[in-house]
Length: 69
Picture 1: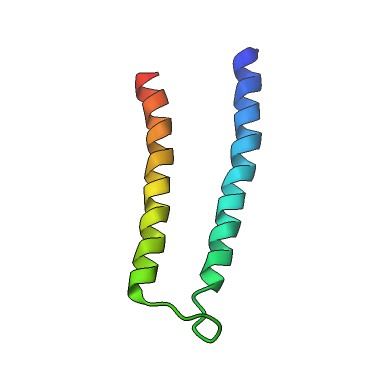
Picture 2 (picture 1 turned 90 degrees about the vertical axis):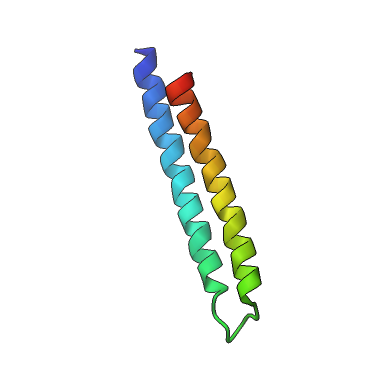
């Protein structure tokens, strides 16, 4: 029973947090409008480099616990 409640809690919490990430990425996408913002390729590479780094770290945390936990 404890496993089921932990599973349900994960589903509830993770679902909401994934949606927040998606919503925030959609907001970031709005900054691509060159009528309102000025940026160059270096800015884009830096932004997405940091985002990719954070995604990799998050994914590795799950893999670590799944395969070594």
